[in-house]
Length: 339
Image (cartoon, rainbow, N blue to C red; front, top):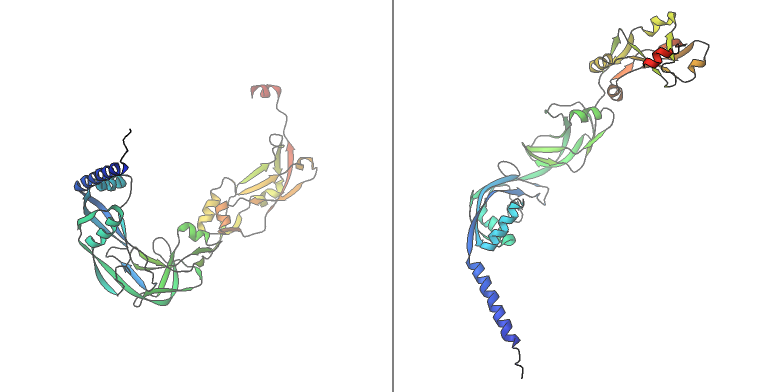
């Protein structure tokens, strides 16, 4: 007769075995030092509060000594090796630090709560032991918006709206700011740029306004300039290249090569002068069939960048070229063979 299997006894043995393993694991403890952790300030739920550490919105923790089961220490070490950064968020409402003034945050209990929740490890010590938290009460003000370049210099600009409402310190300055790069300053001469102004509480500590403003910068002042010796170039259709050459009528040469009057910034004038050709005469398909003198206005070869940003324009009527197309002799058989 087969014996009855006592499943209850087997389960009891397995349960006790697991308990022994767990107890043995927990009995083996280790310590580990976390280096270079940080505490970050979360945005307060109330817009009337501004919170910071002495050196900004983050504070560094040099060391955190944790202790616990070896397996849990191993899990923490694997997470750090995998690239997890030890950062901890500070909510001043949760920590009951909403009164204006300086508060002291004791780091050991603060970190212990968070590390226990995530890793089930205990914080034994940390360096530093505490950090100061600055809390300021803000008031709503209507601030003038000023525009600056990347070096902090004032940029002349039209800003719409010219003022924004922000929560700032009662004794704070009267202006919010927007910063434009040199490329944005140029872009704003032709197209309005949208940006949110900010208020700077301290270097590196900024708060952005809830709305964006539109910024336009005035076009650069253009002054009358003259290109004394313009060079003329030709653009021929591919069907005409090597077969015809343009010939400007003699009495028209002085007109074509006369000084070119423009209005431009100094930079744009120099760029225009540096072009290989300042004047272009376009030769089109069909021009070769004309038996009459052709008349066509010259194209002024302004650099695209300065034309687009309205830094250069013609300050005279376009000159008209009078020309004919002269048929070139066909290449000889010898020269054709040589080529």
